[in-house]
Structure formats: C-alpha cells, structure tokens
Length: 185
Image 1 (cartoon, one colour):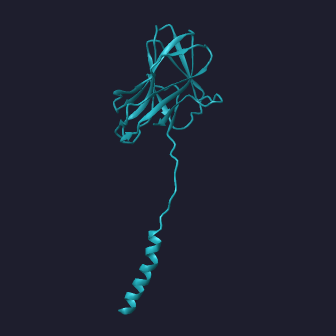
Image 2 (spheres, helix red, strand yellow):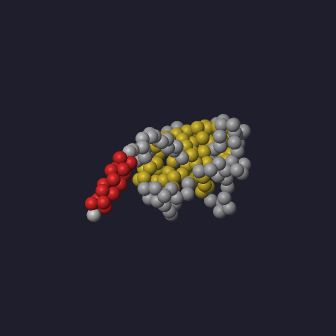
Image 3 (tube, helix red, strand yellow):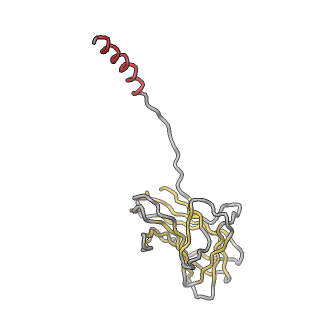
C-alpha cells in the first residue's frame, strides 16, 4: 500500500508542474472580404457575395429607378461587432454624371431587409469605361443577427430608366476585384 501511495505521489508531482505551464501568444484575426458575383438565372435583383474571388469576368446591369443587391450566404453567427463596411466596386454608365445610392443591409431568411448603414453621399459615375469607386459607412454599434441572416450591399440608380449602370465582377483590375470589406471598429 505504501508503494502505491508513493507511486501516485511521484506521478502527481511530475504532472502538476506540466499542467501549470501556460502558453502565451497572440493571433491576428482578419475580417471577412466578400466578392461580388455575376448575374443569376432567376433574373431577380439578388446576386451573391462570396468569400472567395470569383473566377468569371462578368457584368451586372441595372437601371435608374431600380436596384441590385449582392448578399452573402447565411452567416451562421449570432452577432457582428461594430464595423465599417466598405464597398470597392468597378462601375460605368451610359450617362456620365449619373448617381447611385449605396446602403448595406441585413437580410433575414425571407429577404426581409433592415438597414445596417447608408452611405451618406450619392456616388457619381463619371465614365462609360469601368472605374473604381469606393464608399463606406459605419454600423450603429453591434449588429444583432441570427445564424440564418445575411449581409448585403444594395446599389440603386437615382434617375430615370433610360440610364443604365454596369458593375464589373470577377475581373482583377490590379487593385483587386469588386468587393465588400468588413473592417472592425
């Protein structure tokens, strides 16, 4: 019996210092980047935002008075920290000087939408060749989500239906693809 207690004591004495060691370190978490995807067969206003670069070089068209929405898949999270949402999009129009409005939205399963933040100034498109446009806005604190919610980028033309816009997706312009960046605040 004494031998058994001695063995348990020796094993415990050797394990306790091992268990008391701690590992210190740091990690860097990268916020997601979502890439705009091209036209879909359903012909609706909704397109996809993907976490991987889109290989197909396509163009998405929409007209003044109408909108286009790029949305993620289900995020599978319960909340999102306070963030800055930044859109970087290559756009062109058939009517230089036309404007569009941008906003970032939260979408539920049934596509019920709630604004996360509005871009304060309209975006003026000045070319019939693709040019890069950047815009951003801040969320009003933490974003309450359910696992089936998505986030999206909505672009809406501000004029009449004779003006059309084109968004380039899946083409690398040297400064990246059309995308939405999520930046922690």
